[in-house]
Image (cartoon, rainbow, N blue to C red; front, side):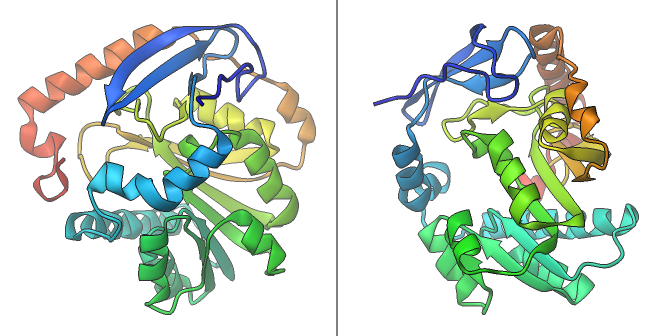
Length: 295
């Protein structure tokens, strides 16, 4: 049975209103807007056991029609991995000893990290098909965070979550868990999510739809300090800011967590952003959607 979310995953407020309703691949998807902080989140949604089964077995079938990585998906993943490693270098991440990639998929990002930094790499991938694919390349891939903790892996100085946070039912406590148990005190957390104000967002697997503001507030509340935050479209678009990328580190001053800033005019920003996207698509189709990564 679907689970109703009674409290906002960011601020805990119980007041919310309908934000969007639609069908996605045969699933009814309903998103709500928190009346206090402006976070958009899915409710009702799949229960915890339903989510576990969905990601282990059905997720790739729903989204790609196959449990195994497709040529197109691998192409997008490789381009994204190259872009991210380049970004890490540009923001002066010059040394990495141990890297954990949560939602490691085919393992292409940790392979690029291993090449660029000569570091030890570990992945987490719940999908059976993709995990087996990565393991066949000799990569160490766990099924979930519990397995990593039970294995008593040493802590990591870089943890990446690329298109993962929006899938989590309780992203705040997940981030707190990483900070307390798996990230070094001077480590970096790398997050990328779809941008509510440019991406379609409202999919059955997306439990949260983040803006720059709500993403920054989420990591702040979990005890991190944002070092870098951008919107961009790479690798799929040169002009549409489909994604938000954030780099953060554990905060020294925990009092900063109390300075909460709510998002305002969310409906207007979503409407304006999607209109802007349509205009860009019509005026500059080749730059709006790069041919090799369309769809």
